[in-house]
Length: 112
Ligand SMILES: [Zn+2]
Ligand SMILES: [Zn+2]
Image (tube, rainbow, N blue to C red; front, side, top):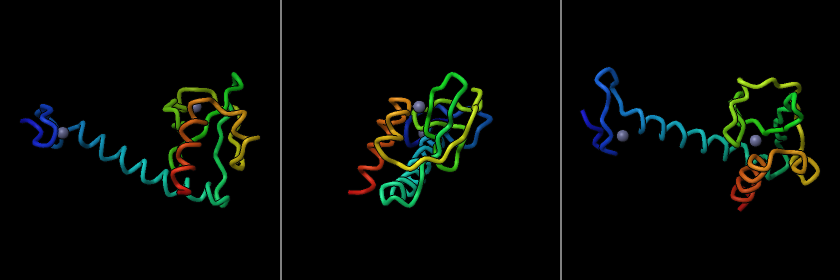
């Protein structure tokens, strides 16, 4: 069978196109993040930061503390500390550059 939406072949043992399912859940996740990022932009919600053993700090996705905004799988790393930090330049200066970019952009979009 072929997916009518994206023309991707659907494996026989699957009912739905894995690509479209994936895209749908990504969209739901993004929508979910946007909701919380609005809170961050308003100063009501603090960021959840995972500090790794190698001193890297990544921002956890809201509702999924095993994944960082930059896509890093935190469950495969040794997380030394989980912190709640207020959004701001002091916090962001300590964060992984990719997480920082994505969250900065998200907060800016959410506050527009
Ligand atoms: Zn598809
Ligand atoms: Zn990161």
